[in-house]
Length: 435
Image 1 (spheres, rainbow, N blue to C red):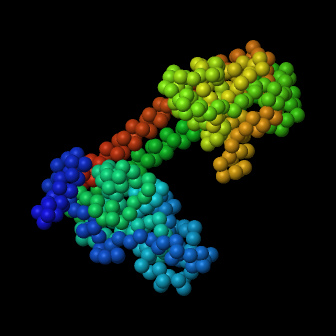
Image 2 (image 1 turned 90 degrees about the vertical axis):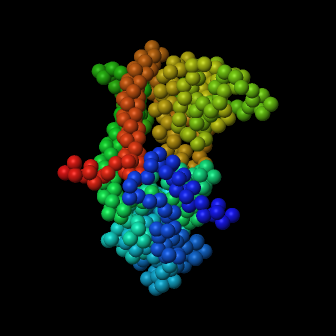
Image 3 (image 1 turned 30 degrees about the horizontal axis):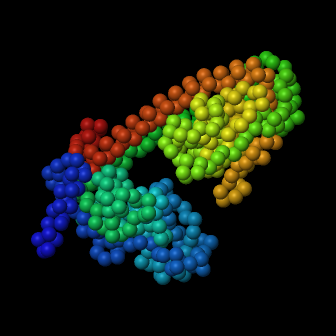
């Protein structure tokens, strides 16, 4: 038993090397995190439980109470809650000081930030774990970078959390994490290097994300304009008399959506009939399964009834609409593909209207039946549908290219961090070359 216990750190170190995928660089060591912290509760501390930090302890101003929002934004210039100055001594064990590493424990568990030098004196809440490192062994910035970014750390956390960190972290898991440790002078260089390089990558990713958002806005505007105004810019227009529609082509008819298409609630499938098959099961979240029963013939237009309210799906084959969705039972002589685009154009308004009704908003036939829409002749519906099919396909193709580029940036970022924090290249040499 004693031999096994003595061998445990060696096995842990070997496992960490395997997780990192590389041999340990010269001058580096591997150490459990607990040995790199200040002794006792000063080294690692969980924020006060809710029973300790009661409402009567809070004040409108005073000592800031830092939470996950500060760590996630890496911004300690604000606070959502405050502790009265007269109560600070009662919570002195939970104070946050410059250089402390704060770690989120719930929800977005595992995110880290170093408290900056200019942060006002404050305390942490119960969702944070405070680490105070021994600066002679572990530099705060490097420690935060490793805990926040290193894949070999995440692998250890997932293993210790039985496959998932969604339930949250705890101090026992964090203390046992094995850290690949370069000399302190190199730690600072690595942290500084990664701060610079990941900031550049993150800026590029943010620009890509903004492009995607702009394309989605353009797509939504394109759909809305086409189904309401048509394709002919020179056609005579008239006032629809409906505020949400405004001016429409003079030859369009204003109708309630219930007279354009009839929505029907989907069906629950008895457990004894749930056999695998070729017919897709369409729920509020899209296609979720396939089975041997397909009562609805194509073309199919399905919209989310719960959860994904406003999502609209098109099906070319027979399908089973789940009871969490609504499907178009009758198109009343209108072009199905036009009805699809029309319902999609209404989705934003439907989502906004339903979201505030209850904690779990839902959509029913009556919510769409009375909506006023502008309807062109059938042949024009065909032309609009074809136009939107082509134009949205172009936008979607460009959007996918941008997302693929963002994904490559993320992969590069991960590889860069992994290489730096496992010593696969000397960042000091990289900094010399860059200068």
